[in-house]
Amino acid sequence: MKQAKQRKKLGRPEGQTNLSDKILDVAEVSFADLGYAGTSLRQVADQLGVNAAMIAYYFDNKENLFKAVFLRKGNEVAAQRMKSLEALTAKGAYDVEALVRAFLEPSAKYRKTKQGRAFLRLHARLHMEPEALSFQLRREAYNESTKAYAEAFHRVLPHLPIASVYHKLSLMIGAYLYAFSDTNRLDELIDMEKKATVQADLFEDIVRFAVAGMKA
Amino acid sequence: MKQAKQRKKLGRPEGQTNLSDKILDVAEVSFADLGYAGTSLRQVADQLGVNAAMIAYYFDNKENLFKAVFLRKGNEVAAQRMKSLEALTAKGAYDVEALVRAFLEPSAKYRKTKQGRAFLRLHARLHMEPEALSFQLRREAYNESTKAYAEAFHRVLPHLPIASVYHKLSLMIGAYLYAFSDTNRLDELIDMEKKATVQADLFEDIVRFAVAGMKA
DNA sequence: GGATTAATTAAACATATGATTAATTAATGT
DNA sequence: ACATTAATTAATCATATGTTTAATTAATCC
Image (cartoon, rainbow over all chains, first blue to last red; front, side, top):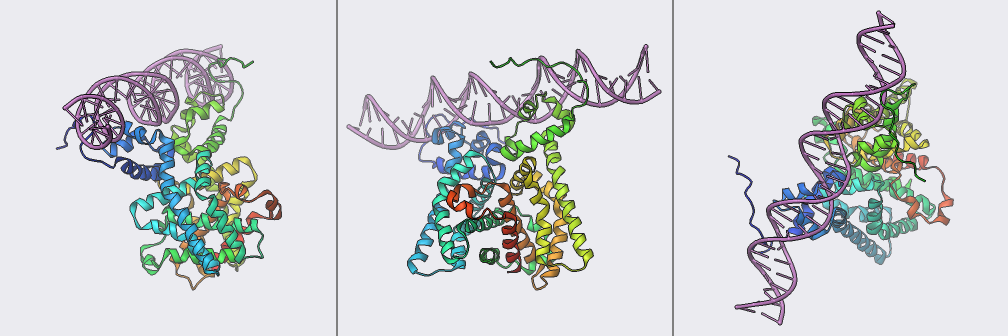
C-alpha cells in the first residue's frame, strides 16, 4: 500500500544532509535527459524529497544551477587536459596520437559511472545548442585548453594552416561528443549476432579515427 | 509611435495564406534555436501574427508539429542519400570517398539557405537527445539509408567487421553534425588575421577527415 | 545559556503553457 | 442561391513553472 505523502518536519533537520551536492547530481541527470528548458526545478526537488525552495537557497536560480552543474565537471576536464599537455610538453616530444589521447582521455574516464555518463550527455547537448548561455559556459571552461591543443597540433602538423587545425580539431570534437553521448543508436543498428564480434574498444576506435583524420 | 495591437478580422480571410507551410518554417527556426521544450507555440504563432489555435488546427499538437518539421527535410535527406547510393551501385564501382561524399552531400546542400541551416541546427540537437521522440524520428527517417551505407562501406572495407563499420560511420556522423550545426565556435577561436588563410572549403575538409578516418 | 546563523518547509505570486471550444467569415459544391 | 466545408479569432481551461516570503527548527558562537 502506497504510503500517503507524509508532511515533513519543519525547520532545520538534525545532522548534515549534503543537499547541495545531491541537487547537482539529480539536476545533472535531468539536464542530460530533458535539457535545460525541459528540466523542472520542482521535479528535481521532488526526486530528492525536498522543497523546491532549497534549489533557490543553494543556487539562486535555474541558470545558476545549470552553470554549477556544467562547470563542476567541465572545469575538471579542462584542467586534466592542460595537465596532460604540460606533461607532454615537458617530456619534450609528442606526436599526433599522443595529443589525441591526452585530449580525449579526461572525457573518456567519465564513461565509467552513471553520473559521469549523464555529464557526457549533457555536454554533448550543450555543444549543439546555439543559446548564449551554452556559448558562454563553453568559452569559460574550454577556451584556454582548446587553444593550447590547437597550437600543439599545429606544431606536429606544421604544413597545415592554423585555421585548418582548428577545423580538424572541431571535427574530432564532434565525433567524440556523439560517441560518448550514447545517442548514436549503435545498439539498435547492429544486429545482435554481429555485435559480439567487436565489443573491442570504443575508445581505441575513436583514437584511430581521429588520428587519421587529423593527419589527412 | 508604436501602433496599438489592432484586433484582427474574424473568420476565414480572403485568398489563401499557405499558413501551414509558414508555421513549419517559423517552428523550424524556433526548435533549432530553443529546442523542443524551449519552443512556445504561442510565440511561434505570434511571429506569424496569427492565433495560436491555428497550430492545433493544422498540426494537432506540439509533438506532431515537431515531427512534421523534422520529417519534412529529414525524409528528403534520406531519399537523396538512397538515390545517390543506388546511382553508385548501378555504376558498378565506388570507393570510400565516393560513399562519404554521397552520404554528406544532401546535408551540405542545406547550408546554403537560412531555413536549411535552421534544419541542420535542429538536426544536430536532435541527435544528441536521448528522448524517446528523438530516437523514434531518427529511426523512421534514417534506419534504412544508414544500414544501406554501412553495408556499402563494408563492401569497400571488407577487412573491417561490420560492427566496426557502424562505429566509424557514427564517428563521421558526429563530426559532420557538429560542423554543420554552426555551434563549433570556430569564428571565436580563430583570430581574424589567421581566418583569411583558409576560408577554403569546409566541405572538402570534412570529406578528407572522414575518408581518412573510415580507412584507418 | 542566550543570541545568531544555517537549513528547511509551506504557502503564495505572477506568469506562461498546451489545448479546447464556440463564434465568425470566406470558399466551395450542388 | 443555398448548404456545407475550410480557415480563422477570441476566450477560456487546467495546469505547470521559476521565484519569493514568512515561519520554523537545529547548529553554532560568545
